Length: 317
Image 1 (cartoon, rainbow, N blue to C red):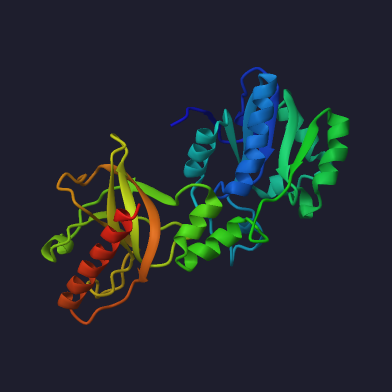
Image 2: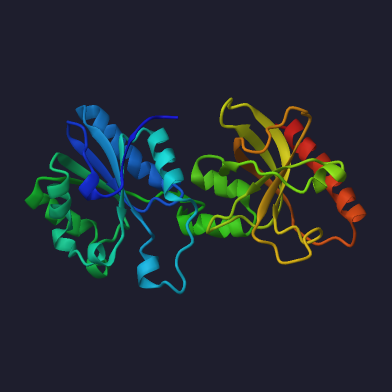
């Protein structure tokens, strides 16, 4: 994993020497459209021997402006930061999005950034970027401010797939529909989750299909159901193909479930990670929705079919 600097606010940012090339945006999911903006900053920083940085925000502005129906994030800030560093970003600044920050006038926004980041030479944004009090600022506002602040402004065109602009909103829709493979295509990497294996009730083992359990509940989660997956351990990077159920386990959990669980059954291995180990699960293909079965025997029979389907999927890869 690429190393990089982290700042928890603009006031804490201390970029290394060199011209600063700053990409600005929420970048939730760091999808292909986001990557185009970020990579423009990285490329320019390399050309000038400068520093590639990202300014992003947390929480999402919707938490302030419509708390009754906030935007559900694809990933937590720390995961977003890791992906940005892996792309080649030197510094990630996560600015708290407070009411005071939201009140900054669009016309003064770039000047304020320049005071915190005096070596800033250029900013990079998507063509639809809006900012400032009342979201009054756009790219043209940035360009005008840049002339006064000595900062170049680069606007990156939105990427499209099948005529539609790639967006975090579209990816959320795909995840909710179980269209995991298409979501990965828009992300530009295989959709994944991370966490620590937890001890379970060993029901899977009793059914003949032992599982590794991961409690995982992102704000914007994939559809509950069964998926082909590949599981990796953090320490070794070793991976195994598997089949996983993500959901509330209605057949075996009679009371209301505390939260969704990802239960992964590995294919063809007896050396699985144990409780307490950190894992990464890459989601490959949606097989079927989660449903309640009439009996454990019916569940066992379906799991056997799911395992066979998953094994066939990986044989073709």
